Image (cartoon, rainbow, N blue to C red):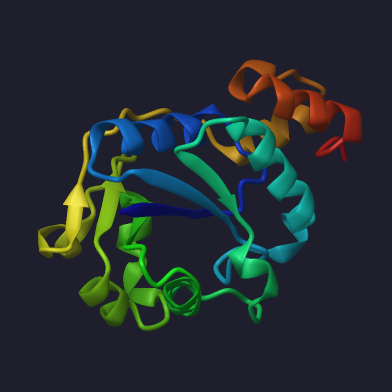
Length: 190
């Protein structure tokens, strides 16, 4: 089964990588695909780097790890991206693969706002990782929701962007190749 880790990855950081590693090593997921979202309907678009640049950072972070993959599946789908549409497209493109969703317990709290969330919940397992200050609510008792004991790393992309804008170095919060690319391209400095 393939775990789909949706996100802006703006930028991808060691917290994302640690979670992906946890899911392929400590659950029944055989692969994790980072699904780079061109535009999350619940986020402001103007704070995002171009999706091709974020895709490049994900590829740099993954390196040659065969259990991890960067997916641009949403780049050619209508925007804003809705998970239900992406899942239907993936099922059509990869009919032999089984997919599951990976999300933080904080996203589970707003899951009822997702387009056709009942359909997603019925058809796909959801692997949930803990986040400080969130309990997940009623959906945690659903048979397709699997709470995990993934380690909690309080690192966020917004923390990294803010650090760079303030002239601080977040280099140890990112894969060295990603950090080198961010510096070279002068991302997030303004």
